[in-house]
Amino acid sequence: MAAAVCGPKVATEGQEPLLSPGEAEEESRDVVETQEHYKSRWRSIWIMYLTMFLSSVGFSIVIMSVWPYLQKIDPTADASFLGWIIASYSIGQMVASPLFGLWSNYRPRREPLVVSTAISVAANCLYAYVHVPHSHNKYYMLTARALVGFGAGNVAVVRSYIAGATSLKERTSAMANTSACQAVGFILGPVFQTCFTLIGEEGVTWKLVHLQLNMYTAPVLFGALLGVINIILIFAIFREHRVDDMGRQCTSINSEGEESGVDQDTEGNIDHVAVVAINFLFFVILFVFAVFETIATPLTMDMYSWTRKEAVFYNGIILSVVGIESVIVFMVVKVLSKRTGERAILHGGLLIVLVGFFILLPWGKKLPNIQWQEIKNNSIPRTISTEMIMPFWSSQAMHLPSNHTVEPVGCPVTQSWCLNTPMIYLAQYISSDVLIGLGYPVCNVMSYTLYSKILGPQPQGIYMGWLTASGSGARILGPLFVSQVYTHLGPRWAFSLICGVVVLSLLLLEIVYKRLIAFSVRYRRMQEENC
Image 1 (cartoon, one colour):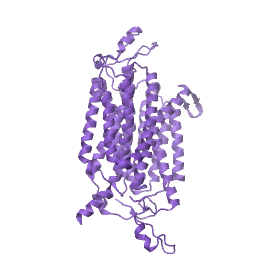
Image 2 (image 1 turned 30 degrees about the horizontal axis):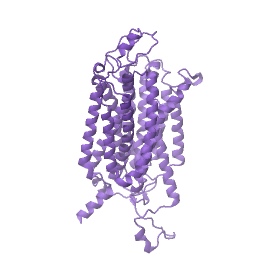
Image 3 (image 1 turned 60 degrees about the vertical axis):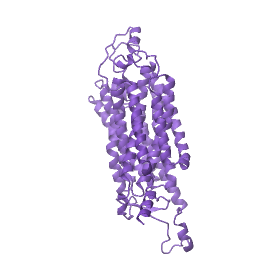
Image 4 (image 1 turned 180 degrees about the horizontal axis):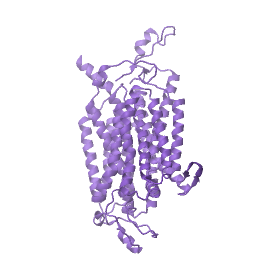
């Protein structure tokens, strides 16, 4: 694997010396960078921020409308197939992340960035046309979402570029900004979706190209437009830059026409125990947050008798507030990490997440409203499906007569725990949202920052690919955990198991705490020991 060649800048033959002989040694540890190079480097980093934002928007912009759109275009689709559609995004990203990461290690990063973004644009356009085929529409939607996820594998490229284009001093701030852009994307996606609902289900049809512009297709077409703009900006503004831990300019294999030196010992000096530990911790962090996101709608519908519309609306507001909170946390953590260090902040973030899920445990005596009571009161006959794979839409899994006018609400009687599990009060739910919204962004940015520092100066594409893949795997297992544990055993078991997983992560963090140090620090210690 190629490693960057770094060091103080020197003048070539025919140029005026950049440093006087007496200053050369003194300045060898300082950041030597022209103003033009600095501006170009940070413009490129901002393009990476935009790419991260668009990747997040691509995931969240349709997440609330997938189920009703799937029912509309293909009545044969059931809730279990919906689970595959939701998981397909993460599966695609999990497969693509190591591939794009490996590609970016040996070729200019513009190549995987443009190709991945183009795949996302094409996939969004395919999603807008899934209504056109006369059959198997659900499989076209599945393919479209999987390809959007595959394109989102460029997250590994983005993270590896930022890790290589920033000094240790800049790294935490840059990673926090990247995570902030990702969080804003996750939050603004549903907001964009909500705005596009004003178009309505019918919308406008452009018969010449068989395009229906409605509340389901407008968001993905908007995402495709943003993707095209992103590609243009990558060609126009993005440039390859690399600096070492001290901020000195480097050459790397990603720069076309440049040769880079190879440090054969670099790979062997990486602390792989620390690398595996961070991958596990990151998996847990993404897993618990995926559970948190997934469980919001079914939990509020079951506990507070909210309708589908109310659950989407109120949870949309709550998640928007949590998103704003997360962005503020990302900004604060940049300053806080300079005083306490990344490891201590990661430890604190995990503790906050643990308290957030502990609060969600049912403590009272009042039971939630049972759905069959509501149905009886409205005199609406119903036949309840006993096989409910995806609980987020448990109410929708019931097959009501076509002429029904009142949506059944409450905790479905098919979930046996509804009859003996106390309800989770709204104050508990809101408090948990606030705490998880505080702890998750802290853990997210600290994981990425520590990971990039542990890896050191060599290209990090493949390693960032594995980290992204572990996060994608967590997003796949999170909904499956909710669909199985929450549906069959209830919130008490679900949240107790989550608390247990977080406690296990805290124990692991304690074990590897002293190993989570920057590569340059570890290398220097090894050199001192050898001497």
